[in-house]
Length: 100
Image 1 (cartoon, rainbow, N blue to C red):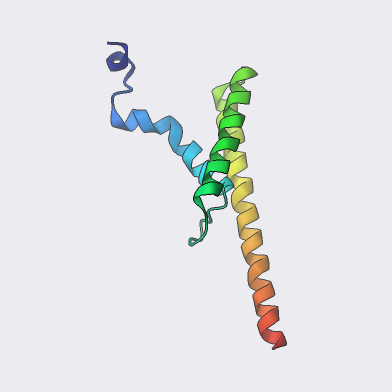
Image 2: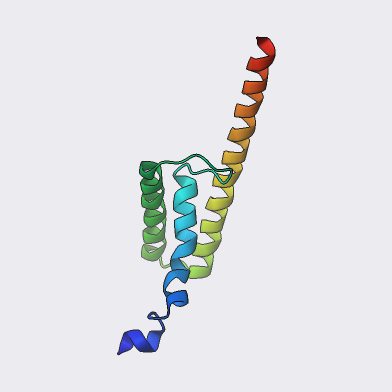
């Protein structure tokens, strides 16, 4: 009865709180937005990090809006690191090709 009243049985509402966590887990785990990279183990480690963050936020009674902002910053930093890492790898490949 309470499940029906809370709206959780609705498919769109059931997944909504977890979509950001799933994206953050994959990005933290090493999956690249540029494609072709990432492992299951890395994603599991990313999920562990996100779960630890969420648990810590709950234990500290931090507002959910602040939790989402921090999680968004974590995603932004992970993507920024991925882009910088990809640019550095491309630069080293170009230098190695020019040296041949």
